[in-house]
Length: 321
Image (cartoon, rainbow, N blue to C red; front, side, top):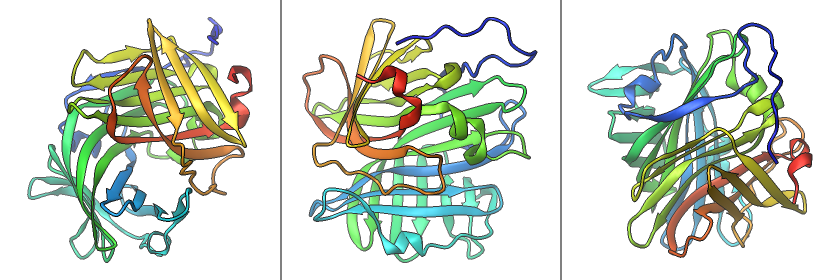
């Protein structure tokens, strides 16, 4: 259900109401200041599959001067992900963020890229077990949180990826996201994680006719809501005034419906579950589970999807189905 925000707040604070849209996806700007805010951290994450059905959902973060942890979520015979030991043992250490030979990103001391882009392409390497190349799909999605205490610019680009994981050829869809905040702040410890985020999914759905729908569907407390969708077969969709309805089974979301402006977009959990291990470093009630997103009434068959829904269940009590 929708909510009414209080019309009176302290100067410079707007109830965490984002403004967003599509921007030119040059990629290099994701590493430098945007609206005067330096890059706080960057992430690559997404769905990559091998021909034998092995399913990986890797995620790697990086600050400007040090890499962040790597998780390699892996599903083979079981229906849920486990964290593969290669990811848990991955290096976390000093990096340099700069432009080298037309590529901007974070670089290890040996010169290999952790995460890097030249604009239309992306490189992601984890020595010994992951080497992925991405080709850009569509524009970048960006939203800005005008807040005096914790301003945030969030940018996300989608790539069609190919490469190898643990020696196996893989392909799929993955995102490169960057968060820009004041230099003395950390996105992971910000209000966006500790208080606001309730149901957030970055999704990409490719249909058998080649059409791609992709975007971010965000629902949170204090008006932290936005729906941003790029479509190769239509105009982009940007909505701020949205309603959400969530169904939870056995402590995990199985359906989330985002509605507004005459549009309804539905995230549905994968029938094999693909639940991610619970992270102890995030607030209580945090859950992640894979699925897919389609517009209500869609009849085309998806052939490739990425849609790991991330919820904080205690923040969804007012919108449960």
